[in-house]
Amino acid sequence: MTAPVADSLIPYDEIVQEALRAVVGRVLGSIAETGGLPGEHHFYITFKTQGAGVDIPKRLIERFPDEMTIVIQHRFWDLKVDDKGFQVGLSFSQVPSMLIIPFSAITGFHDPAVNFELRFQANDEDGVEPHEAAENDQPAARVEDGSNVVAVDFKRKK
Figure (cartoon, rainbow, N blue to C red):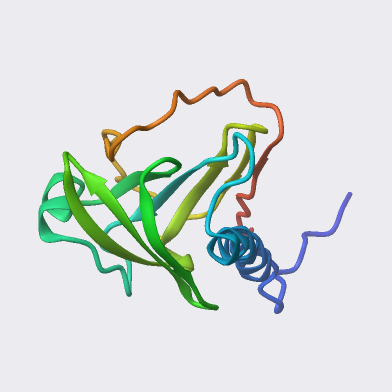
């Protein structure tokens, strides 16, 4: 008979989530420094539109009340990254918009050029409804075959 596993007093899941979000920050930071994407790289970034610190136009919140995905590829400008998050200019239906997104609001990051993907726990996973793609100008086709996907989904035993 095995003994029950004790709850950890160290929040490993939160530490790993924070570290993986730092990967997103490092990648975006290098793009901000160089001013462009290398080769065929481009990013799909999914985030909670109502997350703490998120600042996006009201019309986008109305259209995507829970979560939306943006594409960093052809038309983006003023990408700035710090240790808390990033801001970027994107166009939606030919309307330029500035978005401020903290790393804590990100729930997914995908680079289809190399099929690299990170998924993050959302604090309110229950009741999340499917959402439409953001349709910012010139998105690329997304390929999902499951390779090179890193999914982190820790559940604590109670």
